Amino acid sequence: MNDRNLIKRASQGDREAFAKVFSEIEGELYRVAYIYVKNRSDALDVVQETALKCLENAHLLRKKDYFRTWAVRIAINCAIDFLRKSGREVSFDGGEYSAPVSKSAESEAISRITLESLLNLLDPSEKSVIVLKYHFGYTFAEISAALKIPLGTAKSVHYRAIKKLRSEDASYE
Image (cartoon, rainbow, N blue to C red; front, side):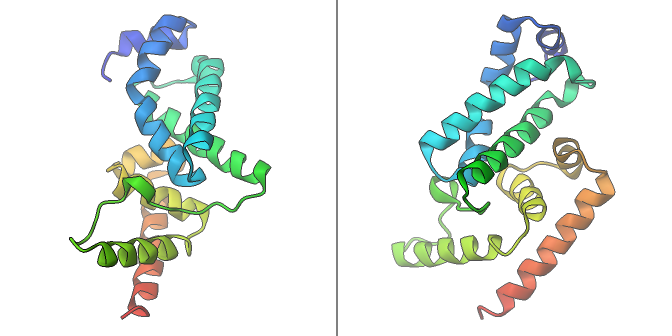
């Protein structure tokens, strides 16, 4: 997604350019939404809401290079808003996107339960940083831009979350 001209046209209201740019990241936005809402239908609703908000606010995007991280942040906010409106708790379930840790189904199920229970210990900001870092491979600069927080804050939230996860993981041994 390096076509700055296409992103610029999208931010100026060109719906065709927006559709092209958005379609490139739609799968990633779906995965972000799914991590939060935990089902296909709700994740699709969140992506649709994200598309609408991105289209309505594309003119506010200052740095065209950050379209992807800007859209991911909107998707996270839409997912959290969706959960609040539906009265559900913000939590993480790797679901179909978690990688199996071992070959046995029993071991994989235990790993998934352990991962889910550990991530549910984190507050939403910590969870967002951890998911973006380890599930999507974002750099700290991308996380900072996506979450609209200073780079140092992204790093400290990451450090705090890892420390929390490590201390809790020790209790599983």
